[in-house]
Image 1 (tube, rainbow over the protein chains, first blue to last red):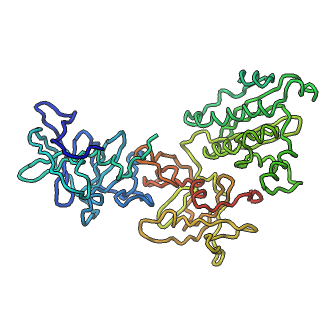
Image 2 (tube, rainbow over the protein chains, first blue to last red; image 1 turned 60 degrees about the vertical axis):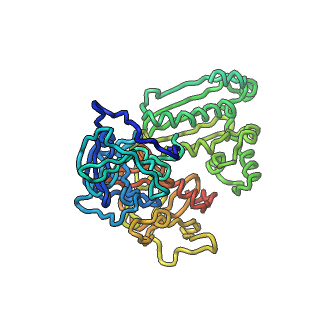
Image 3 (cartoon, rainbow over the protein chains, first blue to last red; image 1 turned 120 degrees about the vertical axis):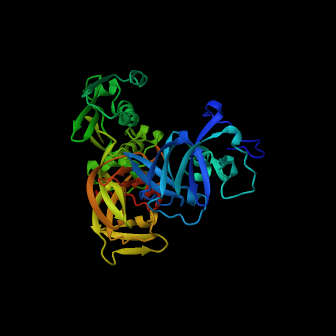
Amino acid sequence: MQQHGYRASWQPDQAATKADLREFLTFRLGAESYGIAILKVQEIRGYEQPTAIANAPAFIKGVINLRGVIVPILDLRVKFQLPMAKYDEFTVVIILNVAARVVGVVVDSVSDVLSLPAEEIRPTPEFASTTFDTRYITGLATVDENLLILLDIEKLLTGADMALVDSAVH
Amino acid sequence: MHELSERLGKQVDLRFTGEATELDRGLIEKISDPLTHLVRNAVDHGLETPEARRAAGKPDTGSLRLKASQRGGNMVIEVSDDGRGLDRAKILARAAAHGIAVAPDADDQTVWQLIFEAGFSTADEVTEVSGRGVGMDVVRRNILALGGAIDLQSRPGQGTTVTVSVPLTLAIMEAMTVGIGGQVYVLPLATVVESLSVEAGALHALPGQGDTLRVRDDYLPVIHLARVFPPPDGTTGTGAIAVIVEADGTYAALLVDELVGQQQVVVKSLEANFRRVPGLSGATVMGDGSVALILDVSHIVRRSGSRREAQRQMA
């Protein structure tokens, strides 16, 4: 997380399979498509009203009961400061397994599962400060002439600004 | 244990009963430290040296009993010795030195409770006082944090018995559910003293101090839970009901909107997938599948800064 400065290119994933095909779950947040490594995904559910946690940041919607386990729900749309984070029957929660935790993230809709050869993944251009750090973006890809932003969801969710994990993990 | 008794030059006959009582593994880890503390205290401060025992007409070998039993949903552990017992006069003197007001004719129970006071008994003070107070406040806090209780009986010259009771499992808790601004929160029933409706005009704002509520002859600090845990819909809550809670020997009135009910809840960790949230000790799943958050009463009372100690007459 401390790596600043020039990033040569995407970093190879240990999940790279034969012929360097990597599988991504793609979803939409606002106008853009994002992809996350499929191996991090546990399941996909409809949105249900979570129990709000007072004084938590706005993107933490609360906690839900996922078959007896208390799981926090984050809204990436709020985190990415996208307008119109509405909750309707199409709102979807992706349950992820990251950093030995189960976490749900709210997205606008889930699109597809696709395999991308490593050479189709392009490095991310560097920007000055944006709503979130570009180091959470592992690369960009073009799918059917549309941009797909590949996220390192684990790094994103465990980043210090997410307030998701204790700063001092004991 | 043996090392301890040798070092102190005391002969101890240690006996266990009820070893077969079963306990939650997580609880064993949490209770072993306080228990070790109690045993050390009993040997160090409770039991006399063989010479002193002989002079008092007791056998040279002091007796220390650890008795475990199950009572209802609780595990009861008694640590008893046949030592010199607590010294009432010295405890009272120590209390006076600490500025704790106690009537000289207070009953023994009241006096014994003093050794559980925070800061009452740091090691060097109490060892010489022959009381057994080395960190008893810590022991009590640990036991209370487990939802348990600690009690002490002592007779001069005959010994002391400390009774610790803890719930058999940490996973299930007797709870009171309350509504705050449309949300349901869970209060551990062990912390609840009583609940009453707040009459109009019963709350008084102290200048620069927050509100206070008169409960019979006492004025208790008031904590508006809807302010500590602002409801997501922005409402402020009615605060029509005051739940009087006791935490770490402090009483406070928590204002809630309504009492929902009383039930057993299964305590689940918030930290497993999320993080520690100040003021919350966990979460539970209600009958309808929704999640309710469990309030950490002692944290809330402590953080409110509205300490009101020496309220023992309420108990």
